[in-house]
Image 1 (cartoon, rainbow, N blue to C red):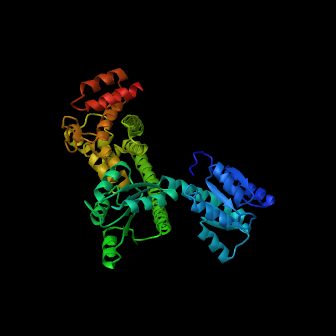
Image 2: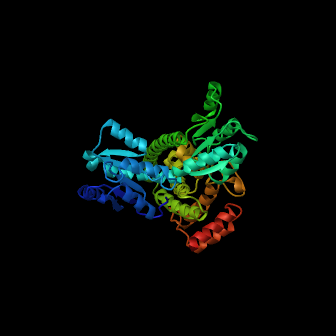
Image 3: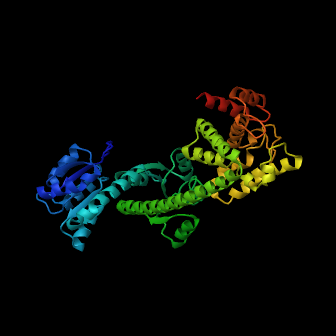
Length: 453
């Protein structure tokens, strides 16, 4: 049963009024809606009339105990996906086994309620929320098998899409990317071997677990599929509950791996940002103009990139690129970098090395790959007469073309040791004059739109 409410709704099933009050008090910090029932029969009636996200139930109750309640809910396609936490004073191994066999997600002894119940509720609801968003792709040429597997997975709370062969599956994937793929081997048009190879060769899909369903139980074929990249192999005919359990286990393990990878990337990002801050501080300590310039250019870039419809992650990378666009100047001698007068040809050639120096400083940091395009190419000209690679037109990365406009505007309007900054109208005239030669026309127009906003 689907629940569209924002606040989770819990059904609390317990025959003791005193214990129900106690459990409600324990759960109160979670701020969830709680409905009570005194036995299994009353609970079933409540479930018929309301949508619940979770059932917390005792076992030993009159009329209908918690085990039978759990079994009834798991038999019904409309209620099978509702998770159940059993809370009981019956805590022998046999009692716990009975609870899990009936379909409970968690089993808690009443002596452990204070320590475990709130955490268990949050964990179960979190996993259920994730599961409801997870998409399983079922690929099998048998309509009967597709239907049985789809029904079982839908009842378990997953979203399911289907295809009758590998080629059709690729079309489905182009519309809805799956979190896990269940696939037969022997299929017309494109079989499971070829389909698995295609999935594992695609960077955007290769991390999705690939589970094989086949009537062929030969060890050689199993080994071959696992070598290609399959995560697991299940032999037909199988019990749908076993398949659901396997899918849940694989996705749970996969989620933990992704979580660990996210934690690793967060640590890397924190370390990277600390390093960037140190680099910027070192440059600003030498050149006071760079301090305000890098920040101002970065702000303009951020605003312009947002207007292209870029994601928040892309905007952040562009922002970092803007902060670092002149970082290569840290490798330029003070006598050249800080010279107040006109530079000689040789000195200007040294200044022109700063994009290359900047790229070399940052290239060992994988997460800065997109930001480096700004650092390396922001002095390219639209007519191809820029540096360091003399790229022309749209061969220059978009973010670098945007940065060139932002860099030019701020340079024109800033005070320098040898001149006062221009007013905005005069700077606009100069930018208009170099549109199509030095600067990208589309990016100049984007800049004007950003300034108006």
